Image 1: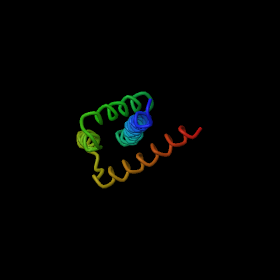
Image 2 (image 1 turned 60 degrees about the vertical axis):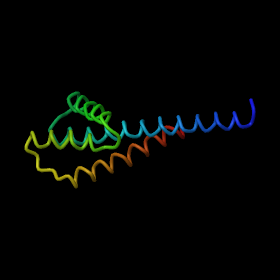
Image 3 (image 1 turned 90 degrees about the vertical axis):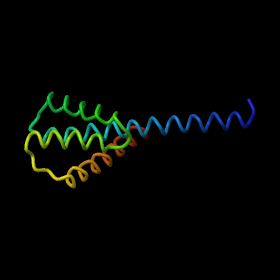
Image 4 (image 1 turned 45 degrees about the vertical axis):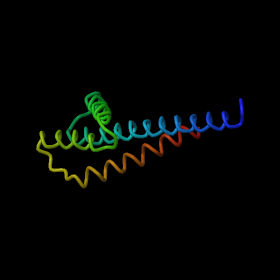
Amino acid sequence: MSGFDDREKAYENKYAHEEKLGFDIEAKCSKIFGLWAAAQLGLEDADAKTYAMDVVESNLEEPGFDDVLRKVRADFDDKGLDISDHIMKVELDKALSEAKKILMEQKNS
């Protein structure tokens, strides 16, 4: 292989790794946020885990977290919970930071 081919392959591998890492971070973030939302909804144990997985699945609808926020907002509204969009976004930001921290720790161990 030529140096150009090696470099091209290296860039492709780096891109694939970054894409996977981004997907893993979004999935972990959605799960953490889903567990927080489940607690707000009064769900515990297996029900909370199932709900969190539903939140993870909702994140597959479109890029970013708007789909997650819409799902959780609808569920909060259905339960009559008065949790503002601001609070939800703050909790989502916390979940994102936690997800990055967890995955970086796993990567480094």
